[in-house]
Length: 308
Ligand SMILES: C[S@@+](CC[C@H](N)C(=O)[O-])C[C@H]1O[C@@H](n2cnc3c(N)ncnc32)[C@H](O)[C@@H]1O
Image 1 (tube, rainbow, N blue to C red):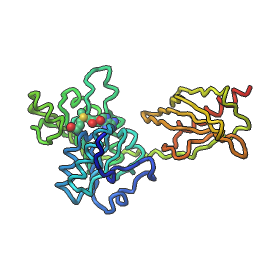
Image 2 (image 1 turned 135 degrees about the vertical axis):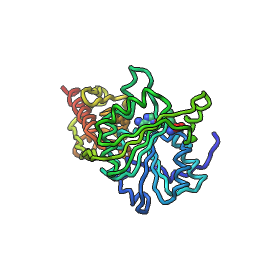
Image 3 (image 1 turned 90 degrees about the vertical axis):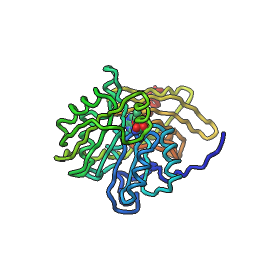
């Protein structure tokens, strides 16, 4: 493996910071904040940040490879006004930004999910547009550019009742992103642009962490322990477990999915003076949610059931 240096400074470990973010503190200055969703290789984010040094930029991206490429470009450019967050924009917008804290949001060539049966995966549905509305300042705007006519028309429909004034037009290629280049090479010379300017505020409070309640068992027998997951609004699956008899400690890997937010973490069941403590494993990175609580409760239930 060839080691390459990239600075991780612009990458925000969002789960470890207190939320919602204080954006002035995050950038060390007060300035307008623009957000790019799905920045891909980061070309546009980096170019725009270079051209607008008095604006703060945040990029959200699901794919680690894209984040890594963008980190390299930010490093080469010596930029200090860009921060990146890896994750699903739907989850992050609910949890990390205060209402009315962003000046502008843009997304260039978001995945169109062209097949009808996949339309449920499209990001810019009415629910997400309302969430964006709540996080943008009055008068702020969203800019979406797509190569896909159906998606363009669908977003316009979705956005009709989300507190925005809509404007749409055909535009030539001007963003020079990887996907714009790809479609140009395939012969597309016009793209569909939607601008949404915030007119009315929609109140969607920040989703907050909960205080986790851990459990203590009088008795625990690792040989008979069978962790059982559960499924309703929250899906909890236990993927693997192990036991260390020397340390008297069991570890269980949990996968929790709730409203599009998926977390993968370890829970420990460890012998202490008062009994066997069931709690998130030390050093484990998670967001305390109802789903995480459910995982702890289900492990408690599984461990007390095996006693009967
Ligand atoms: C078609 S690519 C476009 C990339 C870039 N904007 C461009 O024009 O080259 C869409 C990007 O959105 C990212 N993405 C898809 N869904 C996302 C989500 N829910 N949250 C954050 N990023 C997402 C994908 O990982 C991918 O990098």
